[in-house]
Structures are given as structure tokens and as C-alpha cells.
Image (cartoon, rainbow, N blue to C red):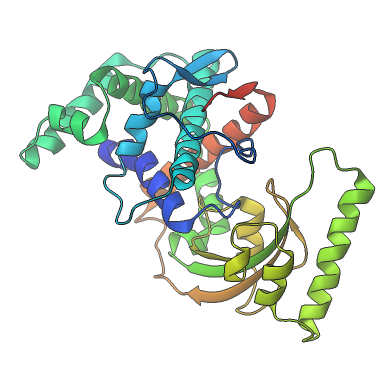
Length: 330
């Protein structure tokens, strides 16, 4: 994967979140829910105002707004609440970035500066081929030279870190385990979701599981349609649409337990109760699109990139559990 593709990946991720909506199964950092009647952001926020603290380290507003601008103009006007949700999704990305930076600083050797300069030269050459400069890249991606240098440093560090931890056997197994992803298979699914309160007792959680199991039995028996059950019972913003969460690949868009369950289903089949960080789900696959058979030897470099991305996500998951995160977004 080229340096340009890696640098633009988080922009594409944010755009994808926008396209799929906020169903709660998007694989993002877990953000505290907005309180009812929360005030909207003021028109002008000081650039140095912290919008979050991650283990005591501040994320200033000056880093949040440029990330939103990277999406470009939206095709339709959005409400204040929709903009606020976009800010929260963008902030979740910045929190992830900072958690990774903190991990890198603590556990990963410093980047080889010769390799950093080589990557920057690669980026500059790719821009030149398009008749553009690095200055154009900074403008297009709304970042400073310092931010770009920090990003490239981290990419090089991760490459060094992964080099000692990734074997051919690891990559082959990863490819085999997630072959539908590399074959570009996509499914579309609907779900019925019940939230589990953070202070729920085992008995309360089991009652929610039973509720979903009972609902599943009614749907299978033909007493109620899945979409109607989702509209009546699902505690997800997708409920009005019958629980439709859209289409997604095997990896990187929805939480792993959700994706694993969905890809194991036949079209119109309904899962047993599935648990994710968001809550408890019944999943029904409504469509499956076959992709194109892939060849491991031809895409081995891409397999490695995705393996490293997955490794980062696993590290992030552990970092989030241990981190102290304070959201200060107004």
C-alpha cells in the first residue's frame, strides 16, 4: 500500500462512517453518548481549546476541524445534530491516533529518519507525477508539514515494529481466515439491537438475551416480520428502517463479532444472539454479493498491510480499556 493510500485512509474511513450512518456497529472508538439536550458547538471555538484529554494529553480543536474538512463539501445540508455526530466520529479518530502515538512512544523504537525521508520523497514524487507539490497535499488534506512528518514517522515505526512480529505463516493464516474479505465479498444485513447498561447485573443481561431469543422464535415462527420487530424493539438509530445497517465487507467496517456472525449466515437466515461492545444483536443477512477470487501470492503485500492494521486495532482495543479519556467537546 503506497504512502499516499495510507495517509488518506482515515479520511476514507470518516467518509464511510458518514455513508453507513451511526448504527452502533461501526468499528470506532467507544464514545460516551451525547446527553439529551446537549448544547450545540458555538460558531467560534478557540483553536487551542481542548476537545478531549487522553491520559492527560490534550487534543486541541485545531486538530478536529481540519479532519472534518478533509471530507469535502457534502451533497446535502446537514442538521446541527448531524454535524455534532460527525465531530464525535472525527474526535474518535483523533483519540485513536493519540492512543497509538502514546503506545508507540512507550514501546516502539524511534523511526529510522532515512526511511522517513525516503517515504516523504516517495510522496513528493507521486505528487509531482500529478503536476502537484507537497504544498498542494497539505492543502488538500488540511494538515501542516509537522503533522505530516509526525504521521510518516509513526508509519515507519509501525513498519519496523511489525517486521519483527509478522511471519509468513501468520500472513497465510490471516488470508485463509478472512478470505471473503480479500475476495471482496460483501453482505447486507439488518439487526435488532438491545443496549446493555454498563451497571447491568448478570440477571439483567440474561433477561435481555432471553428477550432477543424470544423475538427470534416469534420471527422464525412467522408471528412477526424481522423489520417490524426491529422497528418495535431495536434500540439503534436503524430501527425506523427495519434495522438495516447497509452493506459491509468481512473486515474493518463493523465490529468483529457482528461481521463474523453475519458472514456465517445464509441470505434471510437469522443469527442467534450476538454480543458486541454496542450491545446484544439479532442479525439477518438480506443480501450477499460474491466478489472475485483472490490469489494470495499476488496480493501478499496487501495482506500484510491489513494484518498490521488489524494488529493496530487489537492494540487500540487494549489501550482504550486502560486509558483515561475525557470528552470535552461542547
